[in-house]
Amino acid sequence: MITITKLSKVFRTEELETKALSEISLTINQGDFVSIMGPSGSGKSTLLNIVGLLDSASSGSYKLLDQEMVGLKEKQKSQARKENIGFIFQNFNLIDELSVFDNIELPLIYSNVPSAERKSRVNEMAKILGIAHRLKHFPQQLSGGQQQRVAVARALINNPKIILADEPTGNLDSRNGNEVMELLTDLHASGSTILMVTHSDYDASFSQKTIFMKDGAILSEKVNHRNVDVLVNSNY
Image 1: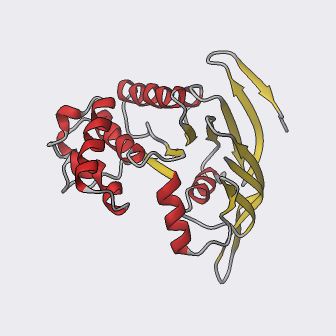
Image 2: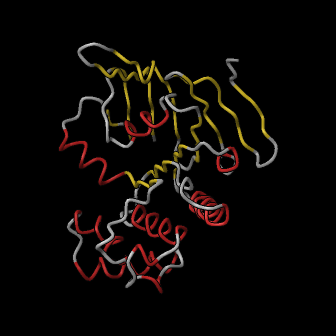
């Protein structure tokens, strides 16, 4: 599904050149659940943004469903993003002035889905995620866990090929955070492909594999067996 080969990202100013990613190579197959960990500045968020077509690589190759993404024009990237990628953010990124229903519906409006179908799909998604009774509420009337469920519903409403989660439990207490991780586990079990950036060893343990990054490079990969970890491909 995703094939990344010798991908690099350099940020340049008049006085400074910073290499955020250094020849990253990575493959994510359909149905995988992969976590990325590393200290601040390791490049994990930059990598996620490039995979999500929110940023561009400086060199190398990034293929999504066998189509090269590096070098695409903004309009082409926007279309590919809309058709293939769902985002879950740490800060939820909900629009406070819109109801829960309207927040979930928004991607369908951008995709020109007819009104009757939008209503049906939003109601069905809200039912699946246990927030059907909250559709008329506004984000500020919800708990953190409920807000993240709304964000997940919005991410899934267009049936994306891959879900990108950026610290999805970062602003939640342990109980609500655990609910979100169990939700992602259920989505993975139903066939979703998930790439998650996290600082939490506990959250990462829900995934199949954890990739460790430092200084813009992949240091190692660890296969997770929920409480039994096997270290592979270690470069330590």
